[in-house]
Image 1: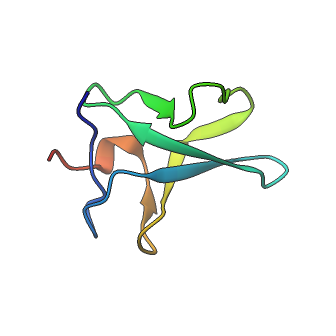
Image 2: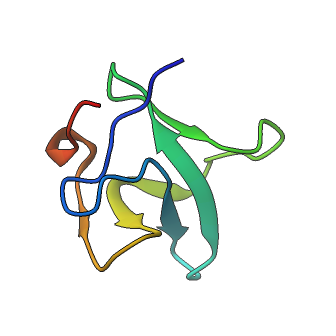
Image 3: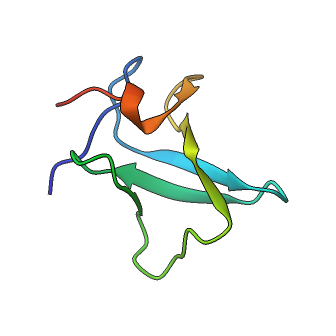
Length: 68
């Protein structure tokens, strides 16, 4: 499966946060679907509209990501 990349540094891993500040490691498919890296994790309660890059200071929406 292919994943979208950070527009600033080019990596494919991000995290999302919930209201308590907990983080979940995610990737975004080429169809702009946010999926957890660990299949056992749930994104329930997490804000998937804002991604935070693990490689740099970029944050933004899934639609801002670039293709490989």
